[in-house]
Each structure stands twice: as C-alpha cells, then as structure tokens.
Image (cartoon, rainbow, N blue to C red; front, side, top):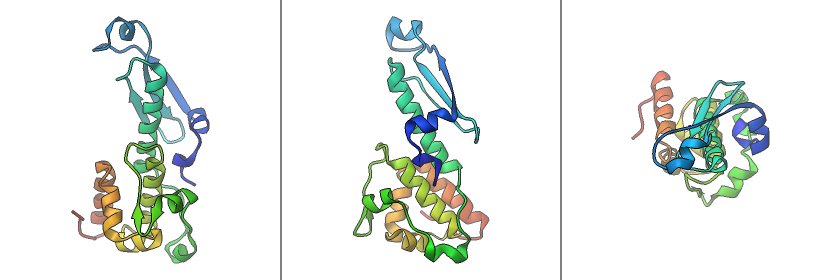
Length: 171
C-alpha cells in the first residue's frame, strides 16, 4: 500500500514538523506566531510546506495534503512483476471513485493524492503504457490521461518515464 493511504496521524508520525514565523500579508498575528508549517517525510526525504493561512492548524492540513501529492508523484511502491499484473487488484478507494470507466474526484479532495499514487504505481507496473494501465484500472485511456492532467507534475512525470522507455509523449 502506498504511503498516501496512511491516516494523517500515521503519516505525521513519520515526519519532522517545523513551525516557523512568516512575513507577508496577514497582519500582526501572522508575524508574531509560528503559523507556517514545513513537513519532511523522514524515510523518503520529501517535504512540503504551507504558510498562506493565519491558522497553524489550517497550514498543517495544507502542508499534509501537499506532502501526500509529493509522495504520490515521487515515491513508487513495490509492485508485483509485470507477469503478475493480472492478479493485481486496485484499492477499495479506487473502486469507490471509479464508476462506468470514469474517475470521479476533484484535485483538491483529500482522496486525490492516494488515487494519483495508485494510478502512477499501476503505470509503472505496466512500464508506462497508459493503455495497459487504463485497462487494469478499469477506465478508458483518455480518462486516465484526463485524471493525470489534473496534477501537471504527474503528467510530466508520466511523459518523462515514457520517454526513458522509448514510448512517445502524450498530449
């Protein structure tokens, strides 16, 4: 299971949390209190931060969401060999969010990073062939591409790996 599927408390337990003061708009409260949050996931070294809100709790939520996106894009889980792909099953979350060949989730929703991680893990298992991955995930290739384009970095990541394996870039 990908790290994006961890509960907030479990993921935070694996992180170093740094609280800081930030300057900028937000008035005197922002400049006096450590509301900015920087999370670093110790096992992977990936990090994310948030400082745009006056509330430390709001910034923690935003930083955690951004960390999940970083993990989804830049961390791959161990997958079965390509010969075992027919035995791979997608998560209950994927099954819940995928109906009639369509992925239904907003890119700002808390489920988005976990679904993105699952899609990218499946693509990696299928050696970046979006048609094979889409078939495995139970969606059309165009739906998979549309989903990945919701996070530009994920789509760029896909095309970079496709290029490395000799496949053409997708648009």
